[in-house]
Length: 106
Image 1: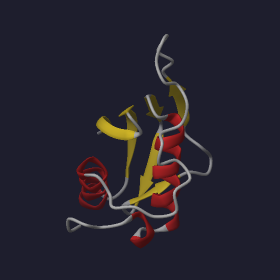
Image 2: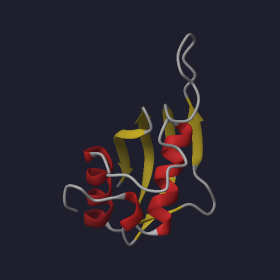
Image 3: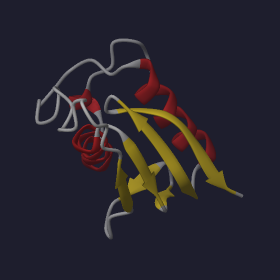
């Protein structure tokens, strides 16, 4: 995936995952299935949203935007999805609507 890739160029399921990350903003997604490099969001994985007292707890500011250039974190996550193929993400940690790191079930 090249720099400058946009949300609009991704599959519908990857776009749904980005929207879910933005809606959660800060927290974790657990039990996310990935099949052939694509996230499976039916059924939805478990979402744990972090609420910071005195902080912003709503969706990320880009939530609901139809298209934008992907940040490096998203590009790298989707590169792992493609490389690994089919697996379970035990934990995907989100900060500011972006994936920070993930734990993959072997």
